[in-house]
Image 1 (spheres, one colour):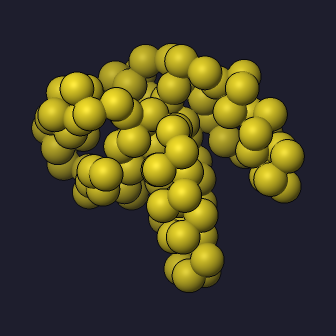
Image 2 (image 1 turned 90 degrees about the vertical axis):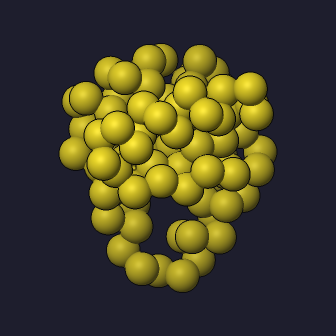
Length: 97
């Protein structure tokens, strides 16, 4: 399963690590966050190969460009509804923190 994350903050990164522990075939395929370079460094320190992860600044660009099997939203609370509507309108399964 190709998973995208919008807003890669502390809580959603913890949730992603929990999903990963179950070994269900989920892969971190794309991340949308204005802190892309910082997140790349963080993931590399955790042992990820960031070459396989696509990074975006714009959620619409990520959602329109990638064939995702699910999206996790970890933005600040004031953006949850706006981002959830973007995902749901594309009929992609959603996890909203």
